[in-house]
Image (cartoon, rainbow, N blue to C red; front, side):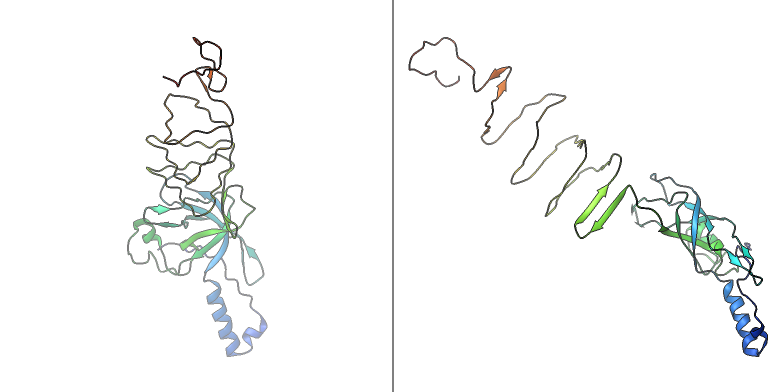
Length: 257
């Protein structure tokens, strides 16, 4: 049988408890209930995962609310080890957001021993007779924390995805479809497409110079090209270039051949 991690009973005995049968019974009930755990704020002191692509891990947590005995003495709880934590996941789809050391969150306590279920992931009888014990805790989520520096924010203005470092989106195919504005802001935005990079739009606006920095390839357009500036090919200006082998006068050169 697993040993209970619940600490001394948090019940103060007062003279009124002995004054009547009702008082004595009330004290007994309060004493019994004080040993049951439901949920408690905890601090993460260790975690098996570090945000990488991996199965859901476990944390070691320190309960933050101490027990108090009948003499008013506070008793700090010990570390609760091998506590499963919650991840938003369904099948093979999930959001990887592992706890980190120092997080303060809520730990909820299962009403029966879950040790066998934790080890097998299958239907099983309780591992012991303990009930509402902190050994059977599950870590849910952060409840006390500072403002994040990397986040996905939802509000009435839309969705904001912010990271102080590079953002990678990988997939066999990416379909960026929106009914309103999609705004990407970064010093550098890189798109790697091994086959085709396709943009479908009624109008495409580029605010800035266009430079082919590596490789080679032709540019083909189905329509006309209009520019208020000049076009230069192999060092020759389309707007100011001259033709040789002609005589001055009122005539014009022929069309290009």
